[in-house]
Length: 306
Ligand code: MLT
Ligand code: MN
Ligand code: ZN
Image (cartoon, rainbow, N blue to C red; front, side):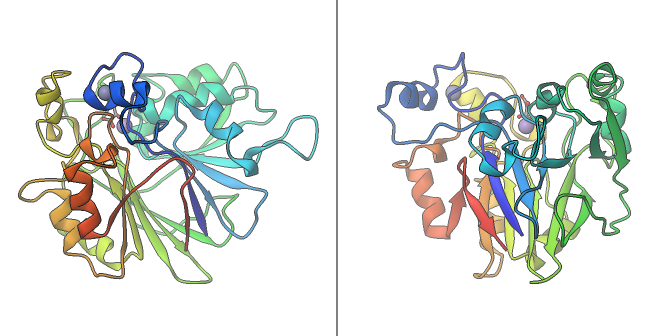
């Protein structure tokens, strides 16, 4: 199984078009040692190398597909390597890219939970809009923890775990989060038995997620913010990380504490990184802290083989 990071940034990307924070200004001017990053999406491929599953469809999808060789059309006048789409939540950074796939000659198999389906047909009815183009075929992700398969990732076993985070701002359920608004995915290669836990949005790590993290060979987890009040400190928002469904890396109970408690053999990677996060600056003290803990920072084009 191979996971390719198509986009490693959170909503807005890095640099964000209207952001003049230290990071965004520095990467724009070329004075900061940091890689630009597109918005949150990964490709999962199994035994076949001419097909893959798109996990989350970001607004930067067009550029991401152009940069990813297996996505290229090759077998006919209309073609793509994308075999199916899996969504972990209904957030815009994970779903706006669906519009960019409207030219498909066949309806898209879209895997999502009931709660996400509800948000994508009511609060933001993108799936209804797509009915006037290529159409979609909804595939239900259940929350019973049962393994399922997704065409395009042969030999990969998928499991969905409900995680604590938040429905998007446009959701009728914004103030009443429920299991299924956000999921983590556990992907296991049936041949090697090796697995990855992918969770770009995690507000809290309960004992079940903790146990799943412990048994995975690789964790690819929420790297949105370093500190809970990061956006307040930078002066770009009054919201705290935890208010919008993201556990910060630092502080008591923070992501780094959880990662440090995992076995030394577990590969630990932060993904969905907000442009305000100081870990993007490769010379920052915060980045040095991660290096000492053996925690990696995902970048666009990064490949994980399991
Ligand atoms: C989030 O996960 O909170 C998002 O990145 C928000 C967004 O899409 O702007
Ligand atoms: Mn997001
Ligand atoms: Zn910024």
